[in-house]
Length: 285
Image: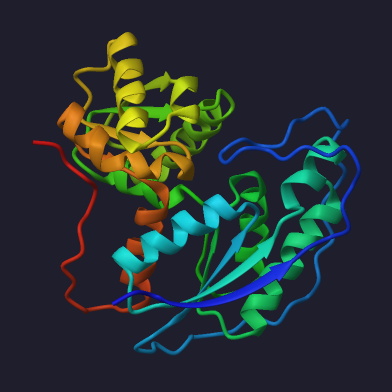
């Protein structure tokens, strides 16, 4: 049974000469010192949301490819959900044109989050990693689960038995961004156990023709950095999800993707006690 879908597209007037960021890349910095604390609207918090058989999960997207991958993950991992897709296809362009996230862009994302929560969303996944910092503000404003794009994957990896974890990407900025988030979660999730994090980059994977070719490039990158003995591999971008199963077959260890992990975490939050048979991370032979 596929997840139920709702769609809403929000667009801003185009800015001449703006350039889109790829999935997983934060917008460039360099816009000068960050201003003081962000003034936020006094949105109403919703206490004790009711558990429903088909909970409404909103997803805010900045690029169509991220939307498609997240929708496929929810159809596979959380088909009980009714998915509400909200697309603002200027989010990344406007952040890039501004040289980074501005207070106006943060407030814009907060308005989108408020829009879906006022519309009845019981949980929210922000698929645009570049706006992940806004999630921390949203959590202070609403008693509704709000997830960053990859944090469920990072929590799953750190909570698991994996001693050595590889982070793979196809765009250079995605690697440090993922490692920073992963390391930030260590004290809360894995304070008593050491973890070794290795990284691998394959820009060839970004232009590969199909999932199998993408997986081969990523596997080659892992071999090149001596990561053949890792216990798990994390995909640092939603755009690499199509290669998950093929890469697992090549490397023989669990391969985790952000969208799938988010869907499973929200399913556990919103349908407690329900037995499911959907697959966890792909594992090779």
